[in-house]
Length: 40
Image 1 (cartoon, rainbow, N blue to C red):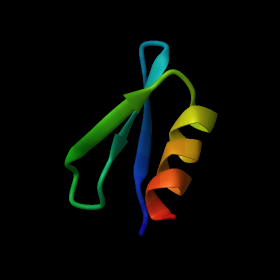
Image 2 (cartoon, rainbow, N blue to C red):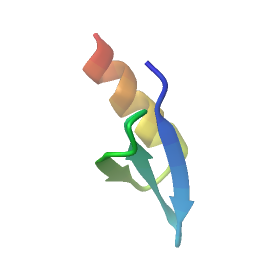
Image 3 (cartoon, rainbow, N blue to C red):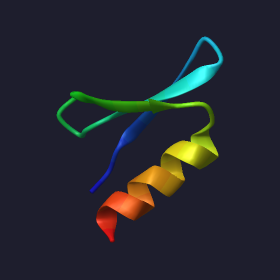
């Protein structure tokens, strides 16, 4: 599944393919780690 990661004022926000907000993270790396954990 593809997710959109948006950089917003010093942090990142992750959105579903439908555009729904999922969560925020301090860095893109942290967001990608969280997405990998959810997929496992």
